[in-house]
Length: 164
Image 1 (cartoon, rainbow, N blue to C red):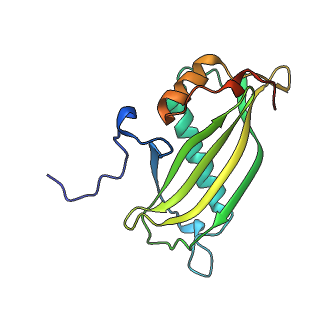
Image 2: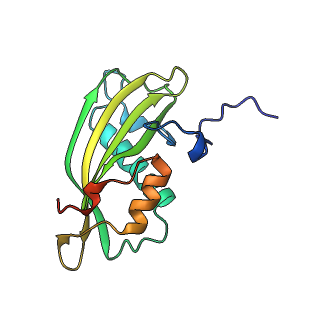
């Protein structure tokens, strides 16, 4: 038996309160992530968020042909709450908070795993993009169902409205 902390969420969908994060991914802070002030540079957070959203979609939306479609960020904003230092143990939490016809809102946090303190919050609006036709396309119903089931979202009438 080991004394190492188990950081990955093992929560089942039926046990996760609505609005809670089920996808939690531990992150490694690399030497070059830290600037001369001794904290993680603000540009690195977006790399952390990209890593976590890639893992989120690999977990939630199986069998996607990433050669023909992509998920494109059309808006992103971040609030830097507290510094992350080189020796912190951190993770990214990821969840979809809203699903539309062609877009969805992705919420992410960087947290300190030892204290559970939120270090940074991010909100992105993303669209599904057809790489061959070079345009946004509707989210497949199987994605909507998988994401809704995973994150505990109620079926929305917004998923039938045209939006970008």
